[in-house]
Amino acid sequence: MLPPTPSPEGEFEQVAVDRCPICGSEERTILFEGFDRLHGLPGRFPMARCGRCGSSYLTRRPVDVTIYYPPDSYAAYDGPFSDAGHAPGRNYGLARRWQLLTAIRPAGGKLLDVGCGAGDFLISAPDSPGWEGVGMEPSPEAVRYAREVRGLDVRQGRLPCPDLPDRTFDVITLWHVLEHVPDPDAVLTDIRRLLKPEGVLILSVPVSDSWEAGWFGSDWVGYDVPRHLVTFTRASLKQLLQGKGFRVEEQFGVVQGLASLRLSLGIRLKRKERRSVMGRNSLGLILFPPLFLYGRLFRRRRLSVAVFAAHPGRSPGVASAGN
Image (tube, rainbow, N blue to C red; front, side):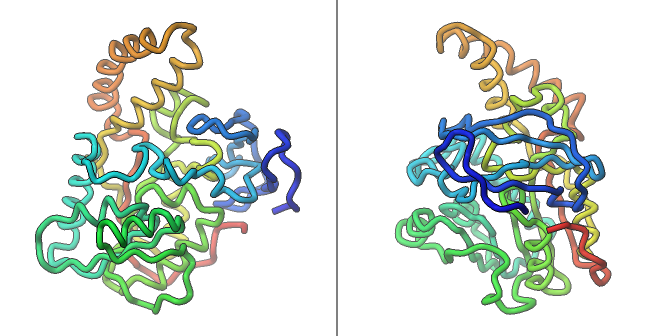
């Protein structure tokens, strides 16, 4: 990385990224210049595609990315912390995650949920014995809520975390986390250390080789500038995991894609349609069903979010990232 430089907006300091965080290549093509669509905070951030591995990444990042996670709306797509209940689609998605987990590990085990937020996944655990859940989360507000309101074992911090002992966890989950970290290679190296020999890593990420990313382009919510520092393809993520010594298998049917498609469509209509909010909402209601059915029926294996199960296999090879 290059030294920090002033933001073009003059508000928040940025740092330049001179090579792909996944493979280390300096070959790249600028795709677009993005900005914070979620909260409207200042800053312009070029998004590039790597010429070697096909991943996309910001060529300028905020020096302090936590600025772009306001505490009162930390759960980026669900609003402030609340125990009043989630939308039905959110509840269904959490249940599907646990179905996958219990299918892979029927006997349960010790679980580390990295980037757990306020503990939505941990608190939605099924009433079955055998699971011991621990969360890790960098936001002090989210940690406080998870501990004091929900009574969960959530610790403030992030990976790599040298304080955690080797071979501690049977399962480590990263639900929409790896795209937020500046050095995915270092995180996966630490996960390999923390997993037991028969453990499993389960992770989900938005992937740019999806039909939705191709359809919406810079309006695709999976880019989520500037919170998403890197956007994987299925192939580049598999390559990174295999380079750390994991055996990798994609898990289909875990994600429905409802939230992603709804948000991408909303971004596109807001940018394109010069009409009232009511008019945009009405048009969105008309367009959403056929687009969703198209994705589910004809592009099921190219949904905008990919879920992978990775098992420690052979000894890790040479790290593939360039950081």
